[in-house]
Length: 323
Length: 252
Image 1: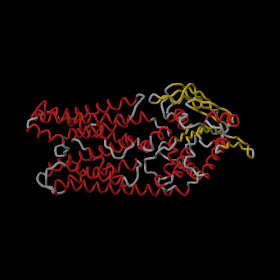
Image 2: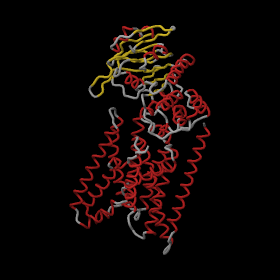
Image 3: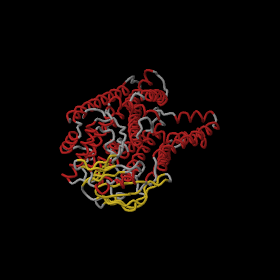
Image 4: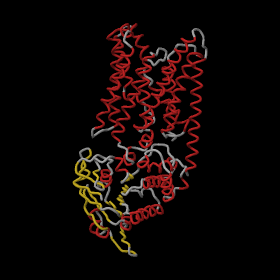
């Protein structure tokens, strides 16, 4: 009996090692393909972009896995909480208030921390009532959806009032892009992400138990309410950090978690968390490499990821019927 | 000992439990019987702290269930709810192994593996260990869930309709196992049963509920009586001793 388990674990870990190797390879390719000009400058620029992609990939992947487990739903992403809609609304409001020129002049660190604080505050306002009695996860998610719709309509309203030049600045700010990453922000986002991922990793066994369902998890000694609220705040912090760094990446999480699940064939979080993080790194860094060198464009990776993510989402919905 | 004092429960305006007070002594098998909607499952959920207590007080071994840390309770009390859907894609051996979680919190020891293997053996699951839960029949899945609950190795075991989907062989096997662990290891089993004859032949005590209240509680022979059964279920039935076993003839 235990042999079966050990065999399985070996197989999962073998796959993880393979994924790590692919991720390294993609990273090396991103750093080295088509190097020319001032080498020191180019390498520094690319290293910053690579670091940003790794951070965002890991944050989005881990937060999506945790969110899906807590919500017991494999086809939702943390964007259902309305955080990215709030982000887009904040940027629109800022451009509206300060004009495109003023918006571009905001201190990036201040901008990052402001965005991070606003998004985590919304999440806390949503989740803290959970700690009191009479709490319903579905109700909270629905509140997030409604708030998201509200922010999106306000965004549309403000965007209509913007002049075309300001609108162009806004478009640049609300589509995820790794082309301009401030090194100062990398450190800030890095600290938040590393801390968040460490907490998620420590909770991996509890996450396994949570995926058995609320009642079973309580029966096995998990203090459900507190654990779920804590994990959701963690998700919000990770999502906020990555969104404030590069912009919304709604579908990336859905895409990489379902891919990772199919590759490793297990829901065990000790395997699934690193697998999803590695998949995210491969997709982001690989996608950016292809975008830069094969497509030769300065296009936005975010748009590509959302396009592919949307198709994968539909495919999962259709394939979902067979299980 | 499980002590329930003045527990009421209302859900969405309708009253589910009405001022229930009950003491389940330590050791032995206690069966909860009663018609649908009597509040049996709700009472079990409250004892197992799956639902917040609205009023009254419940203690297990002297520990109040609403304030004692969940982890501490998980070491003395295990609960199997009616049909807990397992969404995760798991193998039988992994699912059963989760029963040890309150003890190891993540890292299984040799002793855990031993207990898991024994539990799989006990419930006739040895051949199914590498199978995924979602490929099992309802009865096999039920057995895996019962095995997981047993693995938890607690003094108190709460089971909500565990005979669901089980064939006669496995239903009898489960009831005999419950009887044995109660007799040999001094465990306390509180079980919701619909088959009155299983209750009559295996339980030490019977608690009969109706409309959110306890209507009779006592030794099996004192509760399995035609007049009490009729008052609970609403039709008359014969109670006979066949080869020394209480048998309710309710099919007529």
